[in-house]
Image 1 (cartoon, one colour):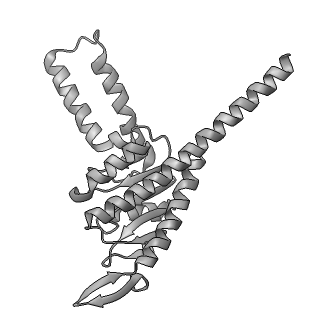
Image 2 (image 1 turned 90 degrees about the horizontal axis):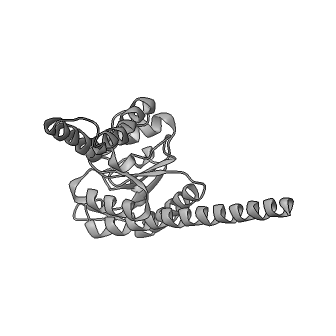
Image 3 (image 1 turned 90 degrees about the vertical axis):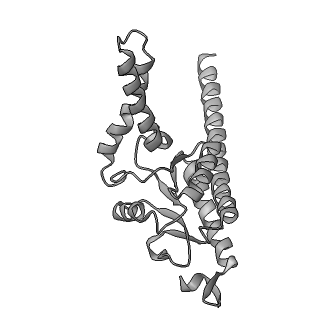
Amino acid sequence: MKRFIFTQQSGIHVIDLEKTESSLKAATEFVKEIAERGGNVIFLATKKQTAQIVKVQAQRVGAMYLTHRWLGGLLTNFDSVKKTIEKLPKLEEKLADKDSGLTKKEQLLLKRDIDKLVRFIGGIRDLQKLPDALFIVDSRKEDNAVREANKIGVPVIALVDTNADPTKIDIPIPANDDAIKSVSLLVSTIANAYEEGRGMAEKKASKEAEKTKEEVTAVTA
């Protein structure tokens, strides 16, 4: 982390904010590019202090997220995890079916299973393939996720504190990951970039659809 440290005062490392700014710019451009081509970025934060921030921002822009715990094998054993993800809508459909013949006790047990799945995978329930990147708030705490991503080549963007190892991160953003206001600002900035990219993708798709419609009209006229 030496290259991200501005100075040291009374044994406390002070992060170089210019480095934070330049890293954040690189991260937002990367996230926007992924979203613009229809890719997915999973927002990850399981630390209590920051989990809600990430969940709210991800939901706001329609991004995928994990805030309860990292699912071991999500990247390295995706096919297996995907089967678990696919269970959720099937169970919800079964519970909603009035003709299912389930007893009240069976309905209660089924609802508990659904609630558990929602807690663990609700934020990635629409994930059909490996994500194009991970955005992690605390790279040290989420070391298992970083390790999996490094193993299979999924890019990692992460907030890295002075006690973290930035060499494992593709785009490290130096920041105090315990400073709630700073984390909130950084997460919302990344979320905004994702939203902007998605907006550009939708605009492009709309133009292409309109062009196709005009071409079909011209042919049939």
